[in-house]
Structures are given as C-alpha cells and as structure tokens.
Image 1 (cartoon, helix red, strand yellow):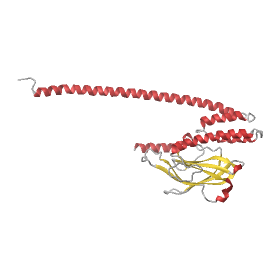
Image 2 (cartoon, helix red, strand yellow):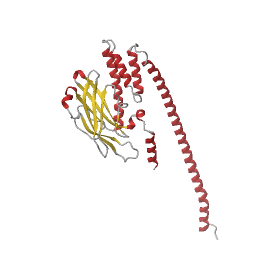
Image 3 (cartoon, one colour):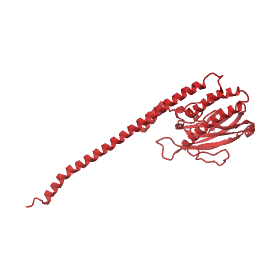
Image 4 (cartoon, helix red, strand yellow):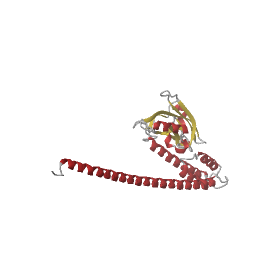
Length: 305
C-alpha cells in the first residue's frame, strides 16, 4: 500500500496550503502597511511644508502691511509719490482681503489739492492702480464662475455666462427712461458639493444707470432681480465709482449667490462710460464673505446624513 495515495496527497496539499496562504496574506498586509506608512509620511511632510510656507508668507505679508501702512498714514504734508508707491504695494498684496477703497478716496482728495501741474500725472497713476486691482479681481471671479460674458460691443445674448459689460451713453441717460442697460440671465456651476453634477445657479439680473456725477466720477446704479420660486423681487440702488472693487464691494443675492457692478471706464468729457455686471458664487470672495457658524454646522449635518 503506497503512502502517496490520493487521500494522503490531499492531506499534504491542505496542510501545506494553509501556512503558505497565511504567509502570503501576512506578506501582503505588511507590504500594504509599509506603503500606507510611506504615504502617511509623505502627506505629513507635504502638510508641514505647506504650513511652514503659509506661515512664512503670512509673516512676510504682515511685515509688508505694517511698514507700508505706516508709510501711507504719515502726515498729509508728505509727498504723494511715496504714498502712491505704498498704495501700489498694498494693492498688489492685499487687494483680495482688504477694502482699499477708503485709501483711494483719501489719496484722490489729496491729489485734488496738489499743484495743478502735478494733478494729471498723479491722477493717472492712481487710476492705473485701481484698474490693475479691478482687472485681477474680475479675472478671478470670472474664472470661478464659468464662461465670460459679452463685451461692450457684443449684443448677442447667451444664457451660459457669468458677466456682461456695456457702454453707458451719459448724454442720453434721461432719454433712456426705464429701459435696462443690461437685462439677461447669468449662471455659474452650483458650488454645493451635494448638487447633481452639471447643475448651475441661474439668475435674471437687470441693471439701469440712472444718473451720473461728473465731478465725482461716479454713476448711480439700480439693479433688480425678478421674483421667482416664492422669493420676492429684490432691488438695489447705489453709487458706483472708479474705486469700487468687486471682491469687496458686492451684494448678496442668497446664501451662495453674489453680484457686483464695476465701473471699468468713466470719461465725462466724452460723455461715455462702461460698466460690468458680475454674477459669482460666495466662495470666490474669500475672507470678506466668510460663512456664518450656523451655515457651517448645517453643511456638516447634511454631509453626515
């Protein structure tokens, strides 16, 4: 009788297979654990590097802010050129987190009291800094809101847009009556992480320019959105000047919707101006529009369900 019969072979295979399987499983587990530890170490290193970089950047920005603001707020008898340079540095580093409009208004008044021969150059520099801020903020808001809208010379309407720019004929404001300068639907991708893929937020917005103040280089603007889905009609009226910036001078439509109007050009001598209407999510305006604690808690409760 041979010991290598079928039953003995099955027993031998079964006896050897179990330890072999356990060894393979243990080896795979150790390999997975080693990979996980390596990934965790890389993540910790990456997080530490990011934190240190943010700390260094914050410290640098704080130093810049303290020294530049101290230079700007020195007695009014100081030369205006250093103040313009300080404002330019502030605008380059803090335009998205600070409302710099009061500094622009103050410096504009000081330029108005400067010698007549120096005013044009100083005023041009101030307008250039303001235009730089508006261009950067408009680009950031349009990038986060979807496709850019129509320009001043484009008349074709498109529903899939988040902005629109129009020329304003200052000499015919009174003649225009109740006709809206901008009347269109605007949209951007829904920022709600629980919203269906491809869903958009959409609003009908109408804008009128009803008055202009040539000495102050400003326009009086009316914006209205029609009633919808049980929401009442909303209405806003405000003065708009060259030193209003969309990331800090905006209006709330709802918890997640914002709009801003920007005066992109104003030439009272030629009786012409241009305004741009922007529709964008609240997530694009950063520290100026941080969510309330109850909204954050509500989102956490929703995500846990």
